[in-house]
Length: 203
Ligand SMILES: [Zn+2]
Image (cartoon, rainbow, N blue to C red; front, side, top):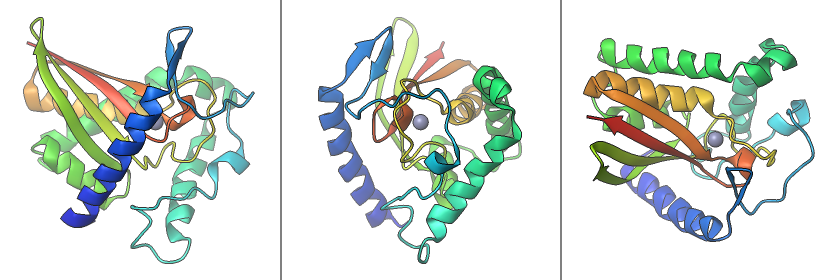
């Protein structure tokens, strides 16, 4: 993805995110976006196949992008359903170790490197915005657009990108050597067309 395509994607999704966040509501402590909710707890194969990604899918021929996004997700079925719904902590820790190793092995030396890596492997388009200092903590908002994990999935009333939250946490923890926590607040599976992570870095 070249700089021009990246900027175009960011502009497109920032506008969409603004519109959707104007129509969000809080239900039992969870932020829910404007897409209508479905009555199911877990996804089946019909939900995860045939996603479409207008920016990351651009340079992939025919339906190739849809194929490898689906293949990535089919891998999730190696967890029994019961474990999948309670295994969020495991997925988060897995992501954290992966993120931390990316830095330790010098594959990622900055957030910009992480952005390039996730775009190269078509995991998602990272948008870092809203950095501020508050009560001895650095607060950051990071969005991931066209996330391989959840793009086009229906709204089941909760975010699901624990692996990605773990990667962001692990990378920032290793880069800053501080306490970091990244929490996904908005996701395709909670009614939005993007993922948004609230990140806190403690001094
Ligand atoms: Zn998500």
